[in-house]
Amino acid sequence: PLYQKYDVEPGNREELLKRVDVVPASLVLAKAALESGWGTSRFARKGNNYFGMRTYNDDTPGIEPKKAEGFKVIRFKSIGHGVRSYLKNMNTNEAYTKLRDARARDRAKNGAPRGRPLTNYLDAYSEIPEKYGKRLRNVMDINDLDRFDGVRLAKN
Image 1: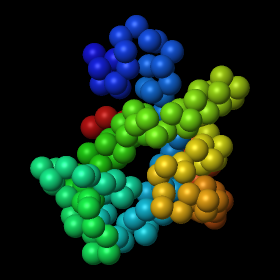
Image 2: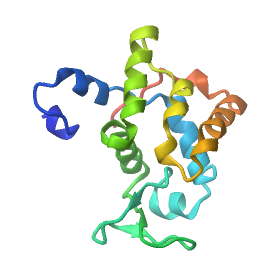
Image 3: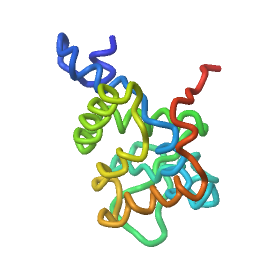
Image 4: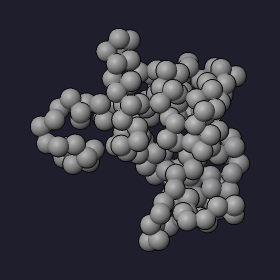
């Protein structure tokens, strides 16, 4: 059931719709590029983790960071598993409630959410919250990533 998958109280249709919505491709691509050093990071290469997603659970497979302690960076079976986990995190984690609210407003106003406005709601994702949104927008601009908003992944 979708309510359970997205951690929503059964019957709360409005909240469920906020959580099952897309994360715009421009935002996903910019974050993956920035977080993984364009796919060159050890976490991306050895753990299929392009988003730097962490775990504090000793039982979750992960990679120990060289310059930090107290967590591991999650090791995923495939890039697809890593992307799906990232999308679920963005759509369910309490830290991104404001992002989901902004995405719902953007959808109501523009018909489809856009990545650029959502860069303002990612303070909780970064260790440099005051600069993170601007860095994402720069990656979007330099690479013309806005053109990918509206693109959807097909199931294999």
